[in-house]
Amino acid sequence: HGVRHLVLAGRRGGEAEGATELAAELIQLGAESVDLVAADVSDRTAVAGLLDSVPALTGVIHTAGVLDDGVIGALTPERLATVFAPKVSAVRHLDELTRDRNLTAFAVFSSASGLFGSAGQGNYAAANAYLDAVATRRRAAGLPATSLAWGLWEQTSGMTAHLGAADQARMSRGGVLPIGPAEGMRLLDAALDTGEALLVPIKLDLRALRADAAAGRPVQPLLRGLVRTGRQPVRATAGDGTGGLTRRLAGLAPAEQENLLLDLVRGHVATVLGHAGAEHVGPETAFKDAGFDSLTSVELRNRLRETTGLKLAATVVFDYPNPLALARHLHAELGTTNDALSLVHEKIEDIDSLIAGLLSDESKKADIVLRLQGLVAKCNGAVEETEGSAVAEQLESASADEVLDFINDELGIV
Image (cartoon, rainbow, N blue to C red; front, side):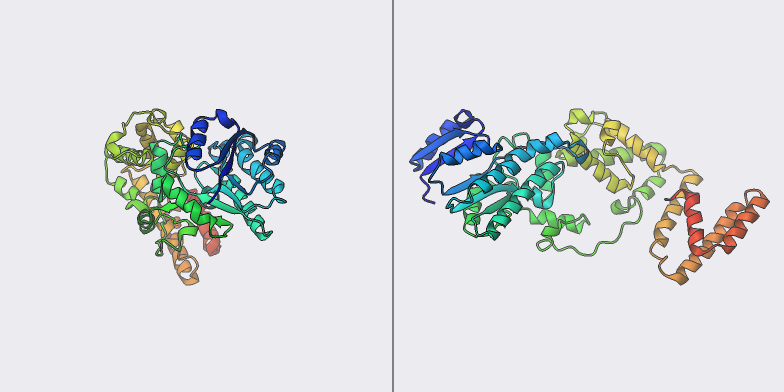
């Protein structure tokens, strides 16, 4: 690009690891000067001083950022401030303090998390969305600006050095592949030539995304132009998405049910942690020892909730600390035994899900209500005759909606 004079600013300046080696390399590549400056770009006074030291400034590229990941319930004002400082504060200062400069480039490194969302990164997503908005506002004002909402980079840095195999596997399951350094530089060049305010340099695994869509998993709205989704059938009962988990359990002895659920839990644990198969997951290996954190525990909870239909807490991995304990908890919650009462409850759940789509048709609704009234009357025959007569009389004169409300009350359905 013909740039020969560079000022590299960071909190540690020339004391940052690898800084002097980088400056020497840039000189070898043709730079005439490389100044390493210690400056906290989240401090407006520091930014103003930095800019004053470069009177011939022609371009700004902002790449700073930090992570402080956690689920929404764990975010605090302090954790928001930590992430906002090097992005929101710094870019606001750079934007406001360079508006009277004759810049040819103003590029900010944003993140696709601001557009797609990212598990455990609510604060980081919000900070990057701000960068995208600044670039859009500058373009509207006739000023140069490009926000690059990057996907995952292959090269580890201070921000991504903490990512382990499980984190990489989670991102790959989302259809995002890492971008190599040379590939990233080509994307940067291409982006700066477009004149667009916001671009998303991201490497997508469209085959994986299409497989997810075919399996009924949701596709990001922004990707629906690339990944076509057919109409998916509504899953009305717990476990229907996996072939009817409840029905599979109903025909088994309690010990076999527990084994099936243990295999289910171990399989999902293997997927979340990036293992090749469930055999790599010990039944009594503690989740915390296996490498789980708040993000992976929430992902496991979500997978099990989708599979079982149970309302599981986000802390379920910590409440039941290994796969065997968690499988036994699921067993107890599902209540899948061979006794008659459990089978009746299972059939009632099936009926409840089946009639849900028929109640908008008044004629069908009336037929269903009459049949249910008969069943309720039969149940009432087992109680005292006077009580049964009173309930029957009430139901006889009740409206269809009142009858359905009564049944829901009796079944404990809210």
